[in-house]
Length: 428
Image (spheres, one colour):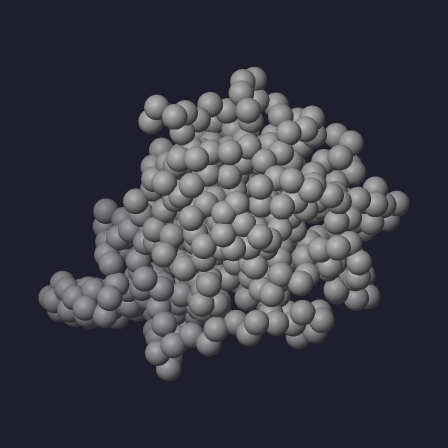
């Protein structure tokens, strides 16, 4: 979860409930006590259905119908507009019909875990294996983009100006994208304002699965798909002691993974979870004890049932974002863990690698620059990351390197004046 520019994984002080996003505040005002939404035109104004829907979508900053709830909401508003003056006696009946029809199609009246809408055609085209997802602020706030592995065919997926969208993660079947949002301008600097979302690979079916304040949490972030797609591991809880949780793909049924050995929460800070390819273990970053300072951050693995916690690093520097290579098998396993290390306590960030049992810790790249957030390719042959070379005054850009430290290549060229961050090819 760490963007080393902003030290984004540092838990921030919880904000008051008034700091909800504009969309959430708008939702709270929908269908007021008088049954009239502020965006519904007054009687006597002739507005056709296309203009009506376009106006609502433009106001919401979405640009498309994003979920069953959104579709139902728009239909209800239009029915209300067309009939509340001319045919008031028909309004209630038509409203009930519209509601029943929408629910019969698979929608849920409330809740953040409803199923996304499938685009026309009944299916979503999976992302090709050579597609890289990343976040960029080239158009103002951060949006999620896709491109080919050579940097070509860059295409924006998310839209709207109310959010910064980042941390994209393709699902194992590559038909969905898991990602994080914060209010525009916050980006990865304050995870107390973060929410968790899922959308189809083409940007449709946008669904918020973990809203602000869910389960009493004051902080959340770093969501990661389980390799079989059946679960998500994420950081959540209270600012002063976030824990690692496993949830369903719709955000329900959170189960705390980190523990003190007696059923209680593990003391200290816990961030940056990720899965072993077989789904049996989870990597995370935590402290060996209290007090828990950032220089105390070490890498651990733990079984998915909360047992077998084992410390893998032991140093006096800050460690983050550990990921197993997709070719890791067995236990402790053959394969490699790549992670991020703050070598000097300042702006020197390096990518290291080690065996799954914590042995043979060596640098992949440690050249004095800021090298952040490693992500493996599906075939384990390459590590993608975002980077600012030493001595260069420029935003982050997407780079790639071989695990043996050779083949350092800048992917998006010529180097742009805007940021490109959090590249990912596989689920991690």
